[in-house]
Length: 108
Image 1 (tube, helix red, strand yellow):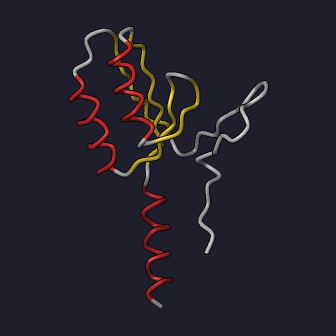
Image 2: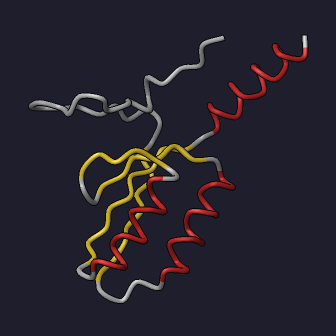
């Protein structure tokens, strides 16, 4: 029974996650690599400088703190919150292996 309770807890927590798009434009290689390394731990790379993230409130705060600690001097980072009702529309050929965070599921 504990496994089912944990599954329900995780499903509810997953539903409370918010969807974010993080983009950056940084000219200095070292800064850009630091930002990329941080974002890889929080989301999925959509393009070279665009990440899609599904985060809890705590994860969002941690992401913001880590990005802020880099103290970017050669560009900027923007974090956009995407409403849950918003569905993405892909036009053209999408890279193989991309994970759709909206379609992600838990298999028991």
